[in-house]
Length: 82
Image (cartoon, rainbow, N blue to C red; front, side, top):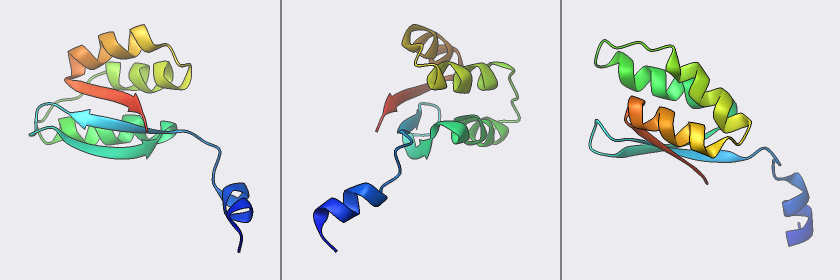
């Protein structure tokens, strides 16, 4: 397989690095549609649930970075393009 074939087979969906600031800055690389599940599972370890989690995922998918930053501050997570 050539490098050109490999590049064609790669997914075009962007992935994001989500960093948990409450648990020793652990991080996961996930597709945009898995951000809410990832953050939700981290917060569940603290017995916390928040409606802001879905808003964060939506803001990432819309590439609304000021909103992503603001929501991330409240949820104690950082999100960046992988």
